[in-house]
Amino acid sequence: MTIEALTVVTLERWLRDRVAAYGELAPDAFTVDTPLTELGFNSVYALTICGDIEDTFDIDVDPTVVWDNPTIRRLAAALYAVIKKE
Image (cartoon, rainbow, N blue to C red; front, top):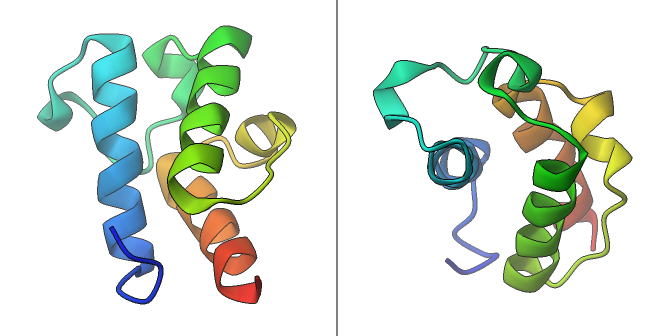
């Protein structure tokens, strides 16, 4: 995924795929508005997904971004703002 082609929707899909994989969930078992804590997300998942974000998008993110933005929709919007600002 190139930064130039990135949209909030593509970022939501990317996050949804990771959340589904880490939580061993079917991607259609939750929405972008389901609180991540309801999906079993904990500090280990937050660190892991932040590592993926850093590796994929070449940005530094603090794991608190996951707790400050507790749904995929909010997290995608927050990350999009950071990525496009860079």
